[in-house]
Image (cartoon, rainbow, N blue to C red):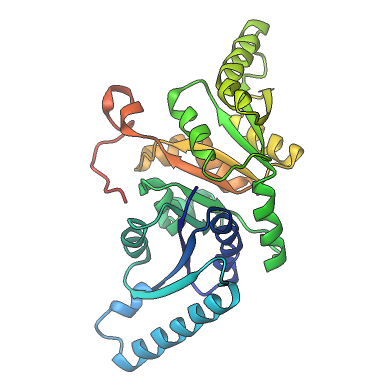
Length: 300
């Protein structure tokens, strides 16, 4: 299981909502949690007085100290650090020593997100570490986050499409699942799929579930008909009360990604269920090359 968990925070209750999820995962793995606060980019601009920078850093340190006191226990050690730098770069550096990154996202869509991006989205695209992405509700509390964290270990969903890449998500889910976790394996086919196609998908799910079944895991297999895979995945997770969805992504970047979109991207943006995103291993990419890629993108 994940033992070293990184949680980027920015001083908002939105980012704080991720901490109970990290705490619960660490508790079960006998691990630890590190909070990271990266100072706003403006604080590294030279024309800002040193006194203002020092004051801002002091406030940030006080905030993370408060979070450590609020969430840290003898069972789950929590520590924190404040760094001055661009958030994405600082998260990348810190994540090299983590097994999992847990963070929230605003879930914005449309042209604003395409132009401005978001730290969470960039971490998902560039990270070689798994990222648990949480889309908090408008009205949120520490108790709600703690309850959501427990649901991850009751019902977990894996979206499969028959490819070796998607199967990676099933293997990764074992990091946060336990003997009592009910695992939902879901395959989406076209709304007008022929019976033979549905039977083929069901057979592939049965093959994927065989190892879990042999180990005594409670497995639910479902073939969903829908022309929108993302919609089908989100609807199923809500209908069955799944606490987490495990998916893979190729991590492609650039304009083409925003025009074409991606199932994982849509589920992260529009689904209220936390998504465990795993960047696909290069060995599983066709020809060993990054799909749609025309430039090298650094990874964590």
